[in-house]
Image (cartoon, rainbow, N blue to C red; front, side, top):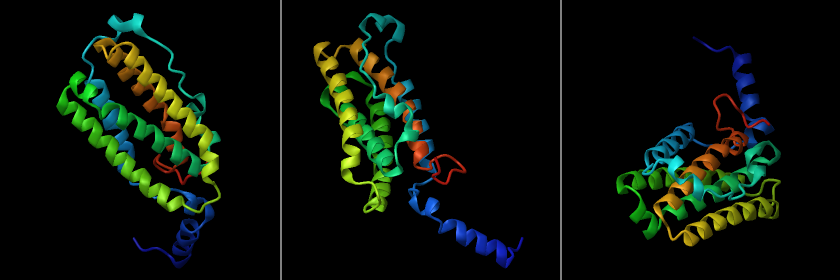
Length: 195
């Protein structure tokens, strides 16, 4: 099927429009990697979550992240990167290695690392855009505080199996909530980065 000159011109105009040029150039596989990460987190279950209900706590997940629409794209990328980095750091410890199946843990860490590399590319592309680094301090700090509460909880519970299970479920919940931030980056099929 041949394209007419006007169709080709329209494609050029769309691809060079401000909406398109602000969008991160992320691979389509990023969403698949996110789904795989959630699948691995689910497979890591070692204890039935209901048996640990008395150990639950509210880690105070930053509600701003649940509604990623309020973040400009550059800020969404920074906040999502911080969240992925914190999850990676949490599970990339000796205590975590002792708590989880090493094959599943390696798959989780590999998937998180790949997502971080993809977001690094996005952040490099966005350098110099209208969002300054100061604009990301508040939300990024909220993510760091959230993960600090998770680490304190693990320490207080002496890294028990139930504590790790509560944290695993919490990470699944927060990771799922990050879909709104990913939506801001145009990671959904057919999305050009528009709000």
